[in-house]
Image (cartoon, rainbow, N blue to C red; front, side, top):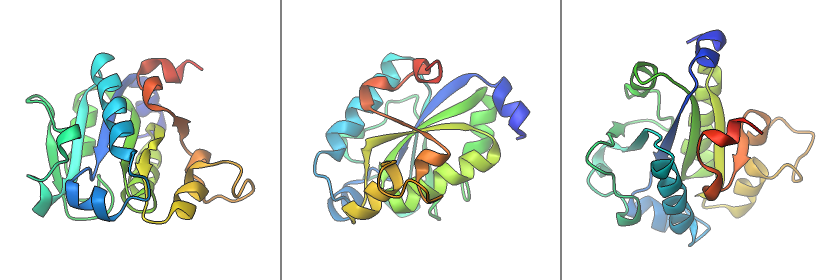
Length: 176
């Protein structure tokens, strides 16, 4: 998708990445990440956003109960870090008229970073729900979502994505 195509697509979708119990329990520095992500998911649902759950293939049936998908929410099985590489996510988003994404996930330095960069390169506008993401290393997480850690570095996700909070999830974040 070109940048122009993505700009023409004004619908926003919510991506819940790797919220399976094993990953949350073993690769998260923040025990509250599930509650934050559940709030972000509920905000997305309330706003009427399409929701996509992307998880490692072998863990497809192990989604954390607090982020359990509803019947109309697809669960895509991946075999790589990024949500796009080994799924049909991009095709599904295009078919739904989506040009903007809100991302939450574990781990920030893994699937969130990879998916955000891939989405940006495909031309999507991206927002990362920073406190609905976590990493095994709290310093790595902070470096990726906090503009004050390495303000002159290109490492930060904030360079290519908006940083939002769970209550802000919805189309209104793009109007600011």
